Length: 124
Image (cartoon, rainbow, N blue to C red; front, side, top):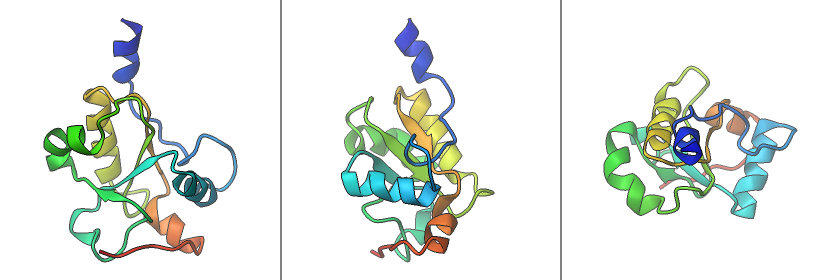
């Protein structure tokens, strides 16, 4: 089936929003507009600093928590980590895709880019 094949594709490693422009700026706009659910994949570092409105979700908890946190398999979801070298966001995005989520993106520059752009963060 076409929809099943689409759900098994690797998550796009693109900007937070598919529009052009700065990654941090487009991600911020998508968050403000409420068009994405943002997942912080940093684990224990979530409490210290995370993107506004981000929900913590680490790879080990995806199978158990995703259905409750993300009931709509077609909703836009963005994962992020500490920087481009951090594998956490890709691992969470890959698992979500394997579970059938169809609009999973990875904010490839991650929170390091966000902070460098001077955008606000939250703490728990």
